[in-house]
Length: 120
Image (tube, rainbow, N blue to C red):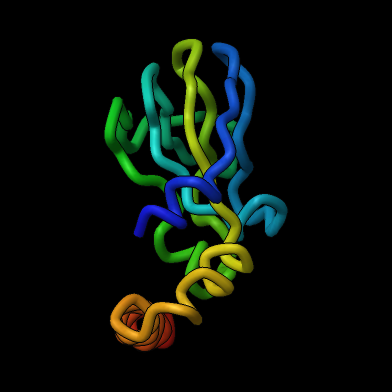
């Protein structure tokens, strides 16, 4: 697991900046761990009204399902405060997991569960 930590990239986001937008496939292949700050997950109604769904803080993990199955985000995410976070792409994670049978087994189990949930 140390290899996963070393493969993660640090980044910063400024208040109001978007990490990704609802139904946008860009950026969906990263698993994000918040180091400090805050990210707001929100949705936009047809009339343009936004409503907050959840606020994520230090230690929160963002994008687990889209990271695994590269599925479109159903919400938007923006920085609600200046935020430092770490991310790893699905490709990098899969390359590392290939060398660790236990990790690959867990990844495959979660992948299959995410696909089943998505297809319901």
